[in-house]
Length: 91
Image (cartoon, rainbow, N blue to C red; front, side, top):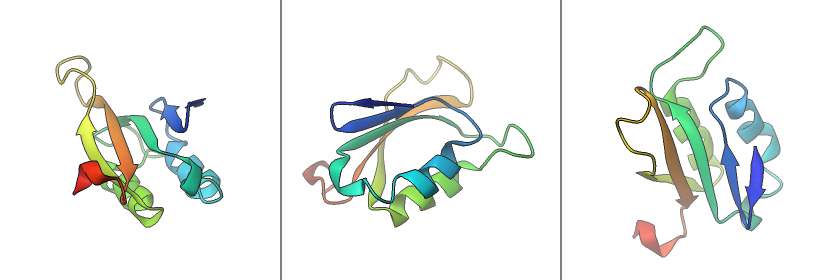
């Protein structure tokens, strides 16, 4: 995971949901976007489901906005953009 400007870019890893749940709480007001490489299929027993990530981010004030990677780039893994719920682009 890396910080880019005021955003977060994270690879698809099984621990991303845990990082979101534990690490984002203290920084939500400073983050203007999150790009997460997300699997839309449960890839292993330890992995989270897409809706669990969406719910965890919603609980922290972020909403899914769009897919930013080409849809045919990697089946079932896509870079997805989440924005703060207050962002005018979501209105």
